[in-house]
Image 1 (tube, rainbow, N blue to C red):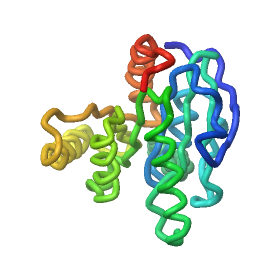
Image 2: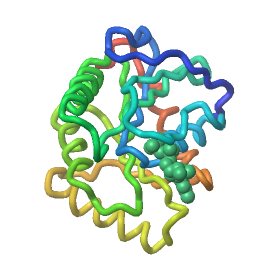
Image 3: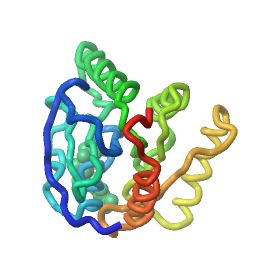
Image 4: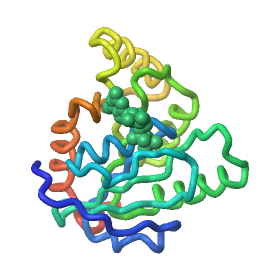
Length: 203
Ligand code: GDP
């Protein structure tokens, strides 16, 4: 898929303020600093579309971008801030679960994990919860330029082992780098195929 246009549409704090669910949608989420903004900018080819975070954990909003006039790319607020208050954490959980469970046009969630960081409990919990709620997702490993090919294989194998405790069939894993563009075509191809499966009443 070629990205012809990528336009910022809106930032909303709750599901009912999101754009009408008339076209397929893909959400990106991960721990703070995982490289989500960089990845979104790499995918769309527009530097600065998603703000590369200087101060994580500020306002928690659901950002919609319209791609090629055909699908939404959604930047969800990250999790795992060290200094976030319990109240803010609860707010985040309510917002995210409300969105993930009820967004009718949501085709898939890309869960970003930093390839250099060992499997984390909160990433696994998040993934397993999505599985239980039957929300389709892909695990997206970021910053692969920072490690060797051998380390990439090792990390994938560690993830597969951790996932095999709950999953009979391993969820899809894509390896990416915002720096080199690795994974870009694989992600866009995946979205392209999913877009064709979209009907307005998908979920
Ligand atoms: P976010 O908080 O998840 O949106 O993460 P950012 O996109 O702001 O990235 C966090 C830091 O990681 C920044 O310093 C980025 O320059 C760096 N970074 C993000 N992606 C990559 C990547 O693919 N390769 C390398 N080498 N650095 C990256």
